[in-house]
Image (cartoon, rainbow, N blue to C red; front, side, top):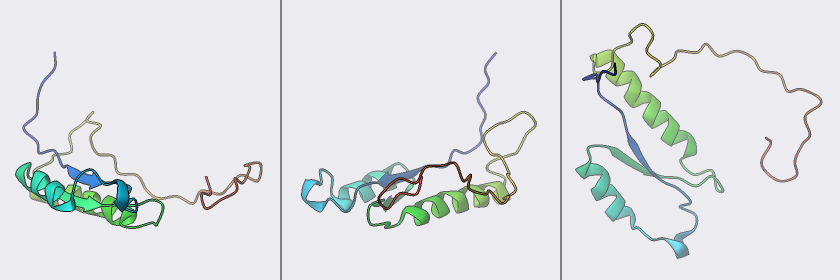
Length: 105
């Protein structure tokens, strides 16, 4: 049996590839108006120029944290919506190949 919770869902409208202004299909104003009409924040990002990528994740994480503090989102047993993970040191394996270019994945 599936149940639906009354907990709040957090959304963030993200416009990506903001570095490609010449191929833009939606203006920032249109996106902002859509986000406002849907009750969410809006941010434009570019992975290429590293513009607002961290800010987008931080904005979403902060909104989730605030919702948790207000009680809009409740942590319940066996619920996978939010996981608290303690940061650990991850060492790079020497066998990983380094790819050329700016990406170090």
